[in-house]
Amino acid sequence: MTAPAPFGARLRHAMDTRGPLCVGIDPHASLLTGWGLTDDVAGLERFSRTVVAALADRVAVLKPQSAFFERFGSRGVAVLERTVQEARAAGALVVTDAKRGDIGSTMAGYAETFLHPDSPLFSDALTVSPYLGYGSLAPAVELARRTGTGLFVLALTSNPEGGEVQRAVRADGRDVGATMLAHLAAENAGEEPLGSFGAVVGATLGDLSSYDLAINGPLLAPGVGAQGATAADLPAVFGSAVRDVVPNVSRGVLRHGPDAGALRSAADRFADEIRAVLAAV
Image (tube, rainbow, N blue to C red; front, top):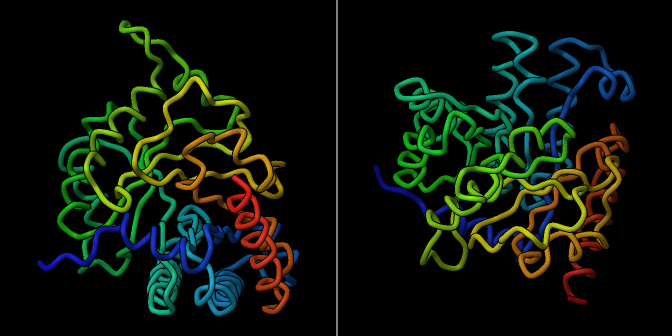
């Protein structure tokens, strides 16, 4: 198996050339209805293909949320397969948001589903949950290294319940979220221009200066747009690691559909705002 360039290098290039923006593909029922589509497989496919056709040739990353496809069973998963394949073929990097997490051969199976080139769901990166212990992710880490793909590990999420686990303090005095960041920094040590093992860190969390976010890897940052965070908030939240942030916008862009031109304009506005903020840092 010949691996392509590592995900981190490909992501750095995409962010530098297309702008550091990730747009979610989240075809939940209310968005399908808002677009005048039916809440079924036909509406799902129309929605997904419209987003890919409008954005895959211009944004750095597209992030389909697997749950909204899986809810339609095998036919929905088939739409996800086509969405991933068509988005990658058009030039976008695809992060499949499936938040998989398990142990041993089961984790290996999840990894092969999304990170093996022979899989119809082969993606550039996958979101994973480390809360069976960071070591449980080893099969996914190993496969990602072999296939030039990446992982985004849940570290400091923006949902209020997340703190129950992520802010819990270990015997060594470090909390669980900080522990996950330290593991990722170790994975990315020495990688240039950017490591392939990133963290999910909410853009709505406010001051995170007590955490070392400089993991030499990307920071996928949900919360920009409809959830209340703005491009201008990013330097205060992420500090010196802000240039490695991949802000994720979903509803803030998707609500402008189904008009392809309006989707493109919305994505361009967010990308331009983020570029302007980074230029001023």
